[in-house]
Length: 54
Image (cartoon, rainbow, N blue to C red; front, top):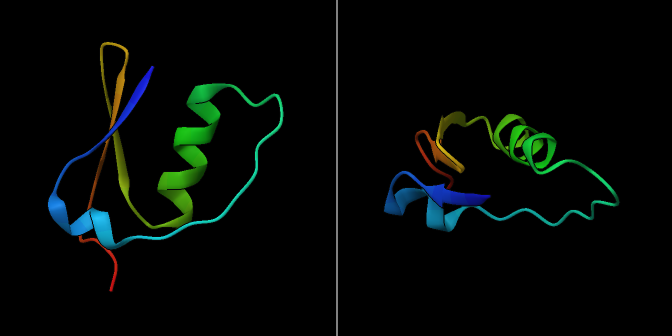
């Protein structure tokens, strides 16, 4: 599984979090929800999209 940024604007987003024994799908969903982003799945890749962070 890979997580990919949908745009360069997302490279400014910061998040510090620890996960233990979480499914990769759950991790991707938590990141998207926390940063108010959309999450798309394309094969084994999750793509984060949205306005980005300041």
